[in-house]
Picture: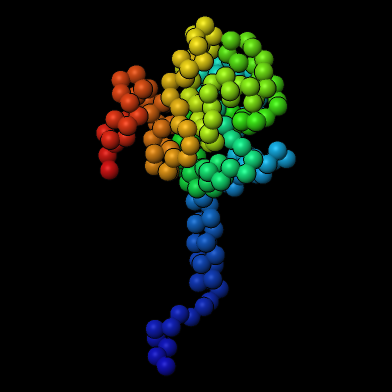
Length: 195
């Protein structure tokens, strides 16, 4: 047996190996938590009194955009969004730096105050906005006062209904943050991205 080509394990090689494994683990975003209502939740999701105007204005004061993530217990694509998309540090870091994300349950009973001051359950709010799939991300204009008189569909600047692969998912958040919706469609925005 040629021992010159076999690796000799020493304390040093063991410590280097452990450090490498730790670095790989650190490159992943933190794991979501499964809550009592059966939804996965990121630690950085917005803790809210469920007043959409206050949430949007709070995000604006922080220099961020506001988005709602609609989910449903047992939704496999919601879980994939958490464990695939949000697990990528470049995606999670971008969203945390640029957004406040409010998680709502499409069949939930918590009371939410809409931009027009109407209080209703999460389920009724989803119906009001025509949210039918999970996950769905809604992205809104930048000022709550400007949204109040608008019809619900006109309050959104973009919507992502259903699961998006990680690259398209990040592109959607960039599309809204960069206000590309003012001049082009999401499809045109993605086509113009460097490969």
